[in-house]
Image 1 (cartoon, rainbow, N blue to C red):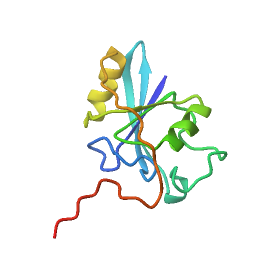
Image 2 (cartoon, helix red, strand yellow):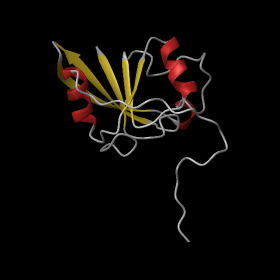
Image 3 (cartoon, helix red, strand yellow):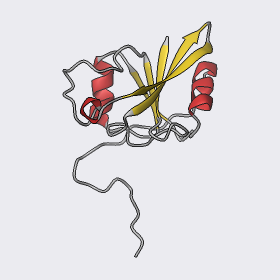
Image 4 (cartoon, one colour):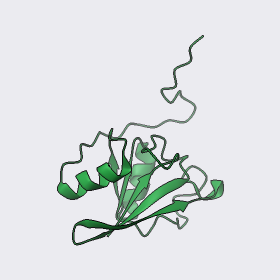
Length: 124
């Protein structure tokens, strides 16, 4: 089994999955992490830039864990038989361990519209 975790800074789980271009790919064997590799996409390969019908470098994973994702991307992953999970957990390793143990706390998907604020707070 393969689990992808969105991690733009390589340390923490990324919130905006559509724009994310770095994903940890965990290889799972016997319900344990057997390996972990960084998959870097080009900007043109990001979910934001590609059509849902195009093949993606992430098509081989069964689960994608992220900090946030719009319903459009979640539906797109579902069509590719990829389970999309949203979590507030920030550590990729811990999120995968929790998923394997059945203890990963997940969040509901957020409706996603383009052109709105993404929860960025601007301080004057």
